[in-house]
Each structure stands twice: as structure tokens, then as C-alpha cells.
Length: 334
Ligand code: 13P
Image 1 (cartoon, rainbow, N blue to C red):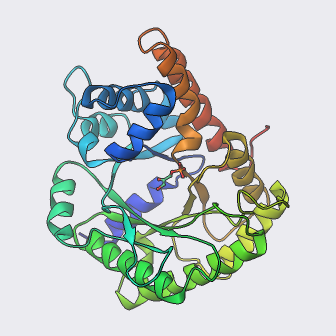
Image 2: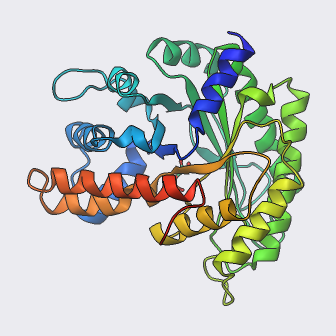
């Protein structure tokens, strides 16, 4: 696999006005989202729901690709078209979540490390054959009393870099996602310091592992106040802090940065992205890879009437894609 091909895929993922829809919830996580709206967590319901999302009419106007879960990459539309083929035929790049989730980091209470490196080369080889052209690995960093530790940060970024190198060897663009969680009562300055330390460690680790940045996408969390912080930074402050943090840590050669929504409201996720792009020009395209902020309205509608609201739910997905696509250009009107 040539670096040119990886770079081309990475650039297409962040094409102007386009972003990624994250629908890679594990079976347990989608189960939680279904339970909240009263949907049973069966294989057919998971398949049908992913079909609803992926077959949204005109989705590719604003969506360059989707991150799928292992099960979804092996599933098909009700007409028997594998989702990966459906996506490719409709101008969207199939991606795949390849980490195996988090476990407690031994010896470091309250901290997590992501697993999934064992056997990863073989899994990536198969995912490529099934049509995936990019992958995602999520590391989770908790903010709390005396955490994160440097040990936790480095353990997580080391794994991200090992994963990224394997992806590039197998022809997949690695989307590296070090998520600094919004949970807690910390202020935005604390989030800034932690995010800066995480990104410094990440890019040092990527360099150590010979990862080619031209063929890598960063999935970042925004610099934002903790959910329970009494003082909530406004849209402008989040946009300015996030940009400053990224500019001081992320090399300009990276083809693009996409954000996770991380529990922000739909509106906040869009407003923050829009504000950052209005502050441009920036060194890299800034776009979205939202999960909840793309899906939550549609899931609610579908849960109310799975047959009757199919179209209405798809219209909501399209509207969220359009709004976030405009925000990726700094042209969202609110
Ligand atoms: P959220 O946008 O819901 O945070 O999900 C994005 C994602 O892929 C997290 O790994």
C-alpha cells in the first residue's frame, strides 16, 4: 500500500463540507442506547437501525464515510447488499472500529487502557478484504483527583501508535482517537492542560512507531468545561481554547482533524465546530466524526414507530449531516 493511496483516502475523509458518521457502537453500547428508548437489542434491530442510517437519501452530500462495528461490516441491507458495498456505491468510505474497549489500568485506580493489539494484523487484513479503508481506535482519558497520570497517558498513546502503524501496513488509514472525557467538575483550563499533554504524548509515540502523518486522521475531543463544572465556558471560549491547544501540538502535515461529540448536545457540537472554522484559516480541515450528536434525534423518532417513522428519522439524519457539514465550512446559520 502506497502512502499516496493512504493520503488520498485520508483527504477524502475530510473533503470540504463533509464529515464522518460514527455508528460503531459495540453490541453492549448500542444496547444501552436502545434501552433508553425502549428498543430490544436484537441482531435484526441493530441491522435495521444501521440500514436506516446508512441508506439516508443524499447522505453522501455531507458524509464522507462511516465507522462501523465488526458485526455491521458483515451485515447487509434488507435487499442483501453488504453495507460496505452499499457505501462504496453511494460515495462513502467504510471504516471499522478495531479496538476491543477499555479495561482498568493495573496499579492506577480510576484510569483505563484500551486493549486490542493482539491479533490485530490479521483482523485488519480481513477488514480490508471486507471493504474497510480506515479504522478507529479509541483511548479514554479520565480527569479527576491526581489523574490522569503520565503513565496512563503514555500507555494509551503507545497503543494508539502501535495500532496506527499496523493499519498503515495493511492499507487502512488510522483514525487515532484519544478522548479526554467531559465527565467531572473540572474547569476548561484543566481540560486544556490534560488535552495538551495527551496530544504531545500521542505525536511523540506516532513518530517513534514510524507512523506516516500524511496518512493519519486525528479524532479529537474538544477543550471544554467538565459536565459538572459550575462555570461553563461559552462557544467562543471552547472554540478558541481547542484551536490553541491543537495548533500547539498537532503537526500541520496531518490531513485533517475530526471531533467526537462526547455527550455534547446536538446544537453545542455543531456550534463549536462552526465557531472553530469561522476562526480559520486553520492548518488542517476541521470536521466531525459524531456518534450521538448525529444519531440521537433519529433514534428517538424510530423508536416511536419503527415502520411509520423510517423516512422521518432519515430526514433527521440528513438534517444533522447538513448542519455539521455547513459547520465544517464555518457556514452554519444556527
Ligand atoms: P460520540 O460523538 O457519541 O462521542 O461518539 C464518537 C465516537 O466514535 C466515540 O468513540
